[in-house]
Image: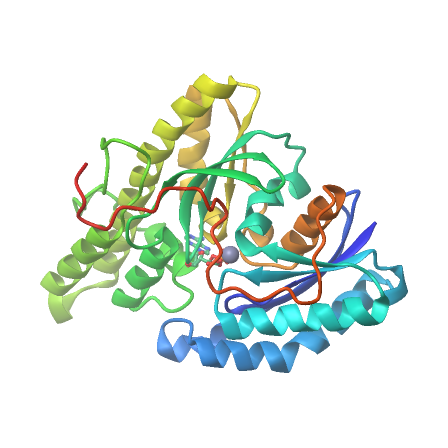
Length: 351
Ligand code: KG4
Ligand code: ZN
């Protein structure tokens, strides 16, 4: 089984060719960083146009690199949501065209499902597992029970953690994309200099909150004024990163207790999404997993940030489970992985 996977829901145009025996034959990612950098964030219209310009060339490159012909494909998978709708449309329409000409099934993949199943492409991970999904648009804790079976037990009541990294980078003028820039600056900083809040720490449930932390960083930055040195900036970055990670670990620790009570130590703890590329977070997760006596799986960074291989792989998993889509499949801006999950309480809700 060979599947072509397309991703275009945010600011990466990506195409990959993956086989059912977990061979990534090609995985081409074109980042639009330079196009968005002047604005310090992703501009939806610029993203959509860039996807239109690049997608066909990128697919061509992936197919050539993989040494695969369109007639060799078993299916074409594309992100069908959630994401910036203009971009999602580009990938989904391209996939429909290719699937239709090649005469193979179309598989619409939930972008979050792509992230959620990545660990099964990079490592041997059986269901069920506890998943920390942390990206620019999402912060969730889910129990992954099987393909298409996701139980959300925690989510953010305001910002996603990746967004907090991006906003912090912007406030500290560290450049775009923010996550890697904050991590780099933090490496030489003092994480204990600023006593930032650990949002939600010790609270009931497993929900996250990051907007208060973001405000605290802004206030600390403003207090330093124009005289801020490079050391000040590194200390701010390191202190922010420590607070954000401690908050994640506190929430995840609670979820892990419940997961282990329900499923024992046979399951795994898995991380996914762009923020999973953060080495400081990875180290903290390893400590949490070691203390609990459970296996931790962190896919390699290039499979954590947005890519086509995770979409192709989710396509393979869905195909194996018997799910395909028809050509009237619509692109979706919003598409929760667990539609039965209780909506997150609004920020400030104290229960
Ligand atoms: O999964 P992803 O590539 O796109 C979304 O679906 O959102 O995640 C992108 C997010 C951005 O917020 C980016 O700043 C963050 O992941 N990120 C990081 C790191 N690398 C990417 N955050 C912290 N540390 C990193 N090394
Ligand atoms: Zn993503």
